[in-house]
Image (cartoon, rainbow, N blue to C red; front, side, top):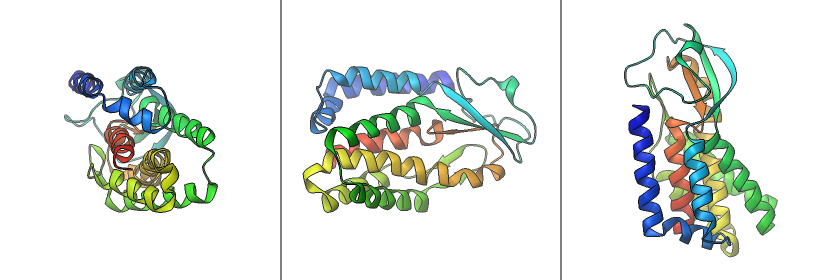
Length: 214
């Protein structure tokens, strides 16, 4: 299953680069198109890395057959019955947050506009995300990016592209991940990765689609 997931991401990377979608996105964000390969490659490689944060008590008893095991720094031997490991995914959380901070400094965005936009996407992400027992957190793909793009265009049209990326990625990360940590105990999973397999696609696609729409 992890190999299939990696193959999917590689194919996705090739398609996005061939179509020039990521270059368009970065151009709208005020960055050089040459940065596309570096950022996208780091995101892809980072999606395979989970950093262990802490452990919580949970209803986990065994690894479900269709569960996507965390990669690189977490091994099945680390899992314990009645415990769930909380980890941080590099590609789905650390890199998007770091890039968002960079965009905030680059475009000197208004703090109030940022907070309002992030809160809007966070609320929608939390409302439409659902914990799926044995799998993780699930959410419709287009809900967050459409909300992010609409919020950015309404709140700050002049900086709609960077604002859409920031509120989209951070909103999903907060609403569909951090605020859902309380649901982890009943999900019976060995590990929950913030920005990982359950929401990586949501965060990744939200950033790209939101900028394209903004």
